[in-house]
Image (tube, rainbow, N blue to C red; front, side, top):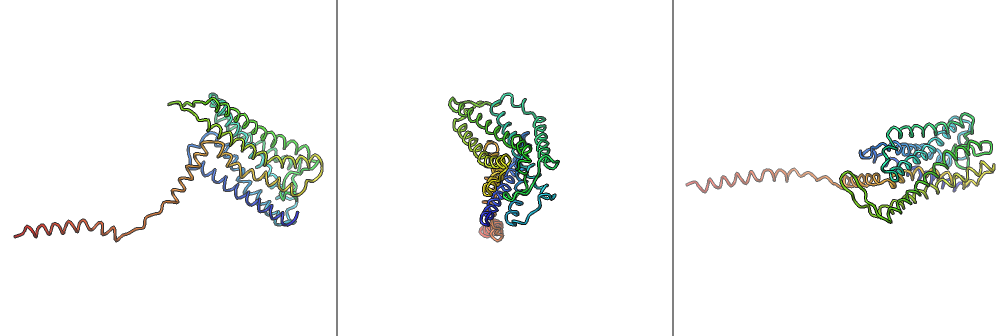
Length: 337
């Protein structure tokens, strides 16, 4: 790959890393400052955010360094490259699976509102979170145990699974169970939620709580539908090139053009920068919390402390006493013979 393209790749990776770090830190800060967000579903949100933040602080800087220090890099058989590939695969799979289960939780809350509390209990959420991490740990450890392998990819500038025909069983298993199935599930859930939203928008609905019932405008449903459609498009744009390139290299045994491989790797890492904004956009309580936190921060920055004026304060404090004393003295003088 030419020097100009490597520099462009490094610049794009820096932008993705900065956006991922800032976005996920913002989400974590909003969760910390707003106690009303401390619900049972916060575990899945934290899993997505921490995985994406770790990707932005580990894998993306490694890709930037490798592209700028080319051709000198770590050997594929070394412990550093094997560990980097393990972390890359673990965080990538954990992020997409945690996001899928968070979407499923949101789907249940909207479409099965009456039985939502019975379906999603606190214990079941904890079990799901533990199973997600166990599955991703086992999946990422398989190449270290001989089923598949981690190598340094010169076109992606990353240590990642080897997409060769020799490792096709592992790659196909990982792609189908770890990537394709969660993405298809999320898109299907978003599609059904949009269908329900459009159906409710046509006839109008009333939402009730313990105190009263209120009408929900159709614009609320339509706005949520647009957000979910945008989310699905972003997921497909980020992941489809990566999936296509990896399966093509694995099944055909031929290498894709270096530019295509690098672009697909950058897109899939950019999803770590989009996930916090997806979480904030698709859930109303997060949008409200972010808006409230931003307004609070702006108010704190806009308030300027008043400059102390000790002399004026002294005059203001002493003047009434001085006037009262002068008035008393004048009264006495006028009343004296």
